[in-house]
Length: 327
Image 1: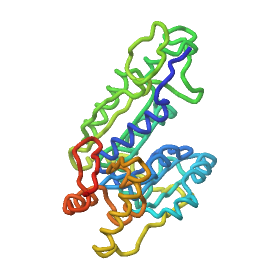
Image 2 (image 1 turned 180 degrees about the vertical axis):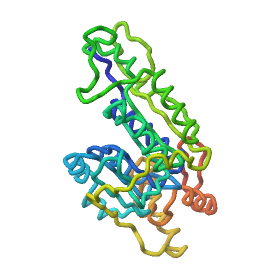
Image 3 (image 1 turned 30 degrees about the vertical axis):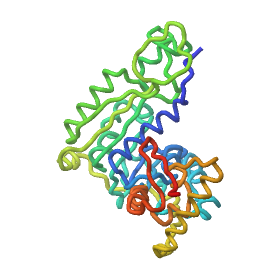
Image 4 (image 1 turned 135 degrees about the vertical axis):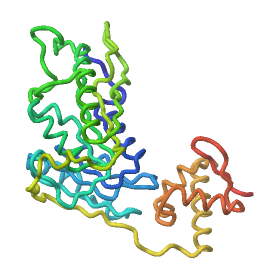
């Protein structure tokens, strides 16, 4: 029996990627090899970040995959009803990222997740250049399977003559040492610092004889520490991928309420939350109310307003903070 991951591997991977993007305040994100759009869709829901994602681009060679992505990324009836605080444009492009470049893309971050193992080893440098050289983002995230972890999947017969890769389309799978060697060489060449991490360390039932060989997947986070290097000019890109789909999410654009009405809205909302939760009240619950998000736009602005209006509601220390009504 293979290990059972908790959370599922796909979710652990997407959470790790999203955390990196938030930590580096990436607002314009491009995914190379976006496939069916699972990661892009994971990044669409608005959070409470002070620097929200406002531009998402996905590039893939498969029109069928992009059709799936378009289905996942097209705004829903709920998106059209519950208007976002910040603008979001999503664009999908059909083309080979090794030989084309989205001309008007200036991404803060590029994601290349579970893609590198699908290209021939002779094309790895071209993919590396496409991400770190051609787009030259502030931060780039690569993930790929950790070959050593295959020892924990009995069906893969790791390190035996009958060994198989995890997917029939994989051209190779790297050990941690091989991944590190590639990542550090790429960082030196293109002017980045790189940090390596394991993903998939959380599981419920490791098999008997489980080998602690890092994460099921491995991640390299590249952070640019110098201007784009001259290496970016080594492989000129003259073609653009074809625009496949564009989605613009609707934004709440009404002016803010006058202060007296804003005070009434906050007080009425707080009372309604407390009444529905046996008097329990939290900052998280208040921020979850769409009308509150529309008025304050960002979590920090709500906190600042509550601090400046202690006659209405008191913020109590905690993680997350609790609220108390003035009696």
